[in-house]
Length: 123
View 1 (cartoon, one colour):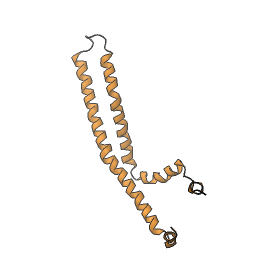
View 2: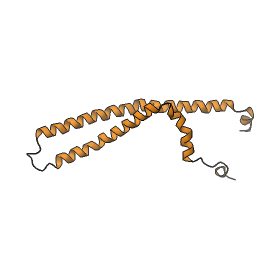
View 3: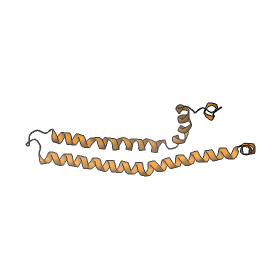
View 4: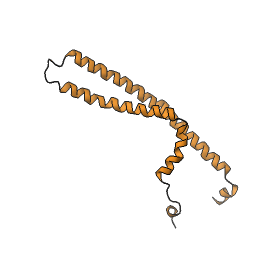
């Protein structure tokens, strides 16, 4: 009999339920990390909207230097927000992932330490 038949793969919902307690400790950082991910997405969507505004302005009189400078300033602010959010995600967000992984490894190692010697003899 194959190993897959004797040991079926757990469902995704089961795996998520086992993973959630590790994330609960870092829920504030996780929520802010997801918020930063949403911000970077919104900032990336803004450039096509700004370009559409510039290109859809039909008459040259409607497209003033003031309008172009305002759109450029808006895009510059969005790039600063995008940079700050990306910095947070690549720094703090990844460190959070390392801490979650460390917690999981510690629990796995503690479980291995609690196993009986016969487990290691048979395995």
